Image (cartoon, rainbow, N blue to C red):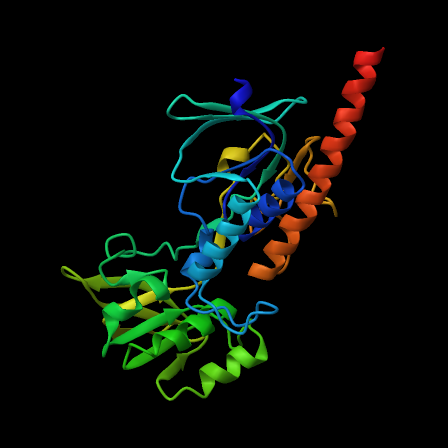
Length: 318
């Protein structure tokens, strides 16, 4: 059991988790990162990151690899593709039990479970996932070389990924429910100036159709109520993420959207438990903000661990 005890366990290996791992392990604290998927989280799905300070341009996959190497070089242990069975956050000693029977304990935990792609929830969506419907331009863009596709959404990710898809597709039609975009001006301008991109505004997709693969979608104009069927070879959906926090219900305080409520030092409602990244309640979600969250959480956890050691020594002395 002593071999499986750590100063800190980080649950999630996205940019927030990896950053926290770098800071904690560099502070000579025994640190473990656990992730149910692949290291890097949603970051690895990003085709190009061009706004990371100090780096002109890099893929999300490459940046994740660098962060992973940094953490491991400082002594951080990273285990991916695991399955969490049970998590206990109360008390000075926290524990995480895996489905294979292994249990890890620690004096502090940083929750960085990230999020997953939000779905439209319309008829045909589940049927054509992987058969024309995708949520990752980097993963599937080249399958649509020379084809006409739809991109759904109006935020930064939707517009940036739509532009990246024009490297492959002959035409990209952006479908958005509002008459304006919720994106930075440079992203809007880049999309509007791209000759391969068309726009259908104030509209939403109500159904997908096809046989073996997707071949059309119903698009409803939200002002007129008129529904038109648009032939398409594929649809990429970029309408945000849902926090991966279902397993934390009744464990820590969550808001009505399932996001973890944190204080300014990233502490949660449980002493010794912190959270960072896309799963916490906040307005902006970028790689840089996740890195900042992870830094704060790690520093706060480090401070907590030092205070805990002092308390424990005082109890022994008494």
